[in-house]
Length: 369
Ligand SMILES: Nc1nc2c(ncn2[C@@H]2O[C@H](COP(=O)(O)OP(=O)(O)OP(=O)(O)O)[C@@H](O)[C@H]2O)c(=O)[nH]1
Ligand SMILES: [Mg+2]
Image 1 (cartoon, protein in one colour):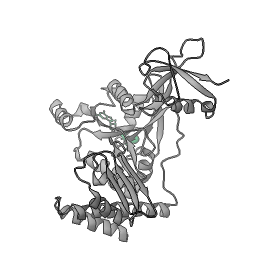
Image 2 (tube, protein in one colour):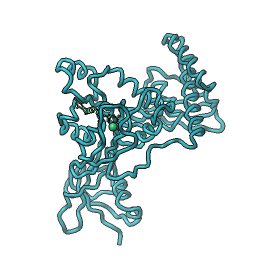
Image 3 (tube, protein in one colour):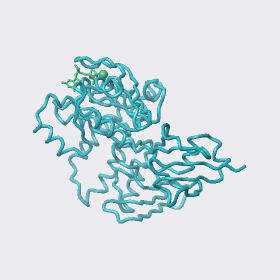
Image 4 (spheres, protein in one colour):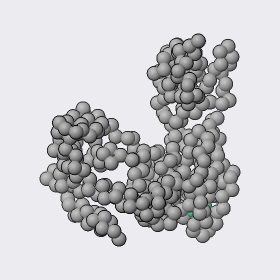
């Protein structure tokens, strides 16, 4: 165990025995910041040792978006890949059947979604156990994570996996915090809270920054933030990914047991990959959770092409984003666009590049001649 790992353990023990209240808040914030910095240090050390960050597997990104399966061994990930995409990935009742990343493609509403079956991970994966670091590295590149759980196993498995992903900077079902943070050379701490804060104030922010040896900075909180969110922003390198908890093998548990899970978990979907139960519902959920926007193009004087939408990954996407997706140079020639659909006030609406498009809009770009 390295020195940093020992210090992490000490801090975790100290945090566990410190009660959270107003008087201890400053101390806890300092500990949390120290912990985050040490964890980053450990990951960097491991990267150095293994000769690189171990970013995932060599799988070419294809399609419009990417979904990755994360779960303990033998929960049924490979069986599920076959159920969703028809691609064969070996499934067997021993652990670690899958040793590399197996890609498949699911087509839905005109979009091609790449689905990655990944090896199982175990506790301690982020610290280098099994192929965990590679698996989690790959998960960081996904637009949606399916946390696959075995309905016959304790629900604590979910917490363990989430902890692993969290330790690698993956934030599930969270939005990036609305915090502006900029280091400065001088001028001290310029702190502004645009919304009433339930936890943070200037002193606590200064305490956290002190752990990073930062005395000059500008911080604007645009939402009610926690100390963890602020630390995430200072650390950087966080990814915010939607996640669905898929409970597999429900053919093996009773309805009552299922209902207990359902009442406790918000992003929960029961399925049976082997028997094909709820697979269609899962496909719809995958689509819904990825917040993809379909835009149909309309050539001048022609009907829109409804068979091949252009898929944009962001829920809120502008005409400019659309043009960039089509061609690097399209924006240079852009004059205006004609838009039909729910984002338009009348049909067609003549819009500039800043106009925000909505799912299933139709667009015709008019170029400068
Ligand atoms: N009863 C039941 N068994 C299932 C279901 N899905 C998968 N299994 C079985 O569970 C075992 C493990 O399935 P896999 O698909 O290999 O699991 P995996 O998560 O890919 O496992 P690793 O690759 O080892 O991580 C196999 O024997 C499957 O037949 C299901 O929905 N119901
Ligand atoms: Mg497998």
